[in-house]
Image 1 (cartoon, rainbow, N blue to C red):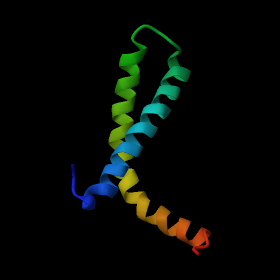
Image 2 (image 1 turned 90 degrees about the vertical axis):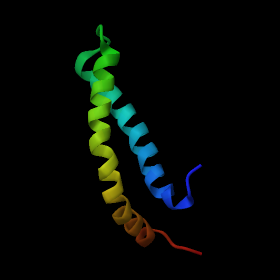
Image 3 (image 1 turned 135 degrees about the vertical axis):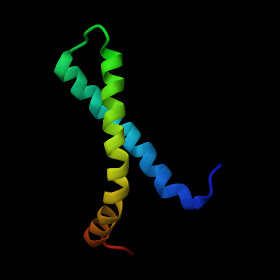
Image 4 (image 1 turned 90 degrees about the horizontal axis):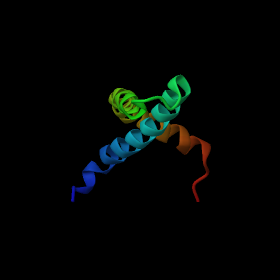
Length: 75
């Protein structure tokens, strides 16, 4: 188990991994169809996307939190 201070980074890692997995799968399918070697193409696209998505999530998350705080009413 990790200390709680790592929660935001772990959240970003998991979220960016899952989202980039789904989006790269859809994009790869739309670009190639179900061709031989689809899974290899998909994994390659996913890893490239994740390398961009993870740091981007870490950079954008604080801004997104502030925007959400301004858009909702807290009790």
